[in-house]
Image (tube, rainbow over all chains, first blue to last red; front, side):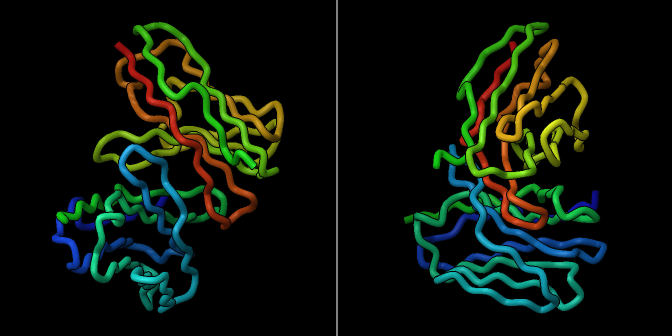
Length: 111
Length: 112
């Protein structure tokens, strides 16, 4: 399936700093889903974006889908230690039931 | 609702041994999946099922078999385990196409 590149692979921030992870594709994506996996845990769904230019917010988290639907970003404002984990983007490609995941961005937060 | 339940949580196998990982979901989801997660590799799809009695290969199917005899259960089998199959295995289910994936807690498998 279509591959998506996530950058950066790792990000270490001081508590209170902002954080952004990017998900990029060379082809148009039909949708993007974002998941969070706490250390030792399982991935948990955060949000889905389907429309060009879409922006959604969840408290301190802002999700964007690019105008060309080839990239997406997750921005966290004023990180907290509870934000620690790996953030994955995923998309369904040609079928709407088979998700392909990016390799994830591991966020660590120094209190 | 228990959601997605995986058993066992941990397992150690010797090379060449076989085992079956069990996944059960009580959400009446149509689609079920097995992923493996390795450091730096993200989540890779092994096999999936779009309904009872159906299975299909994912990205990394070699060395694994699956069965979906009942809608709520999806079994992953390793016939002859190899060290390369040391990984964390996640089962997941989806209600309908395009909806969120619900993951189990994972099975940590070590093959020595």
